[in-house]
Image (cartoon, rainbow, N blue to C red):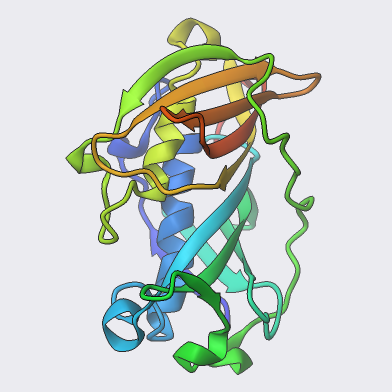
Length: 249
């Protein structure tokens, strides 16, 4: 099964250019992959109450071809790439206008028993594996990030607030995206477009915790890390920029 949805982009999803960029595409990404599971009746809107289990999103990988405007609808699509996953699900995402793919991505997720705090198999939620598409997305595999902040520069520190939280009472995955986008100021971002943004979630963050955001330039991208006050790595990412094209969708 491929979940598809027509969507009109909104100005609130735009970046400093007035167009939809990385921040908006990540919103579409999460909307599409969660809606896929909701359509099956296996989303986080019902799993905690029905099974005492929830989805945990561990990694996102997004590739952007171009920003987009608001003059016509988009198609959001999502499907499970790996048929009959044993533990870890790889779920694909695309956003298109007509035949043109504007952005695409992959999410890694797993199921977690809320009481035991352990990963559990899909049969524990009676997951209907015959619905999985099994079509691979043309996208490189997830990276392996160094588990250290050595050699990185401190950008700023963020305190987790009420509006950062979700149903699970920890910081929502989407809230980490602007943390890393804000590691680059307007002067740096002007004239550039993010082409690739990969993020790995390592530890949950809770209200009133402080997260320091660090970055380091590598050969072709930037490595970013969010660290708790006790030195624990909470989240890591890489962002790749290119000089901005003059045209958009």
